[in-house]
Image (tube, rainbow, N blue to C red):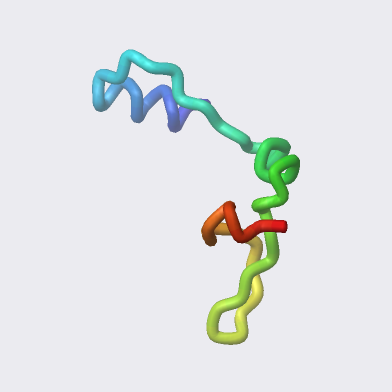
Length: 54
């Protein structure tokens, strides 16, 4: 990804940055879910405690 390359170069990082553009990993863990705030629904990452997940 160009954004990752630019960021890594800017901050002189020596690690490879990962990306999940197609949401495969998020979906496999079941954390890409519909969320709601002030009546507006949108998709986002589940951020509650994983110990509470069933």
